[in-house]
Picture 1: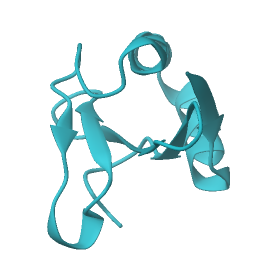
Picture 2: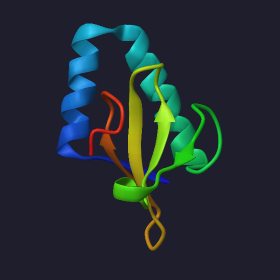
Picture 3: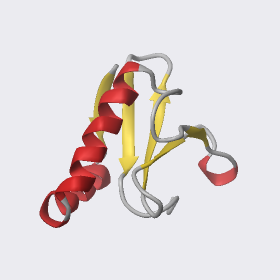
Length: 88
């Protein structure tokens, strides 16, 4: 699957590149895994509910999550954010 970063996710990635190389390494591992199988794998994939219904999350660490949406009609995953914990 193709991974597409939203503007917010791109900003989050740039933030991590400046702050923490270990987090960047983890994000890259997660994005690679998401591209292979978006609803299973590492990072404890979780289908979100309520206000975030239709989106998924994976753990970067205990505080931060990757939030993403799988587009069924296209072969792509839209990454919405990579910092904090369910802020949308």
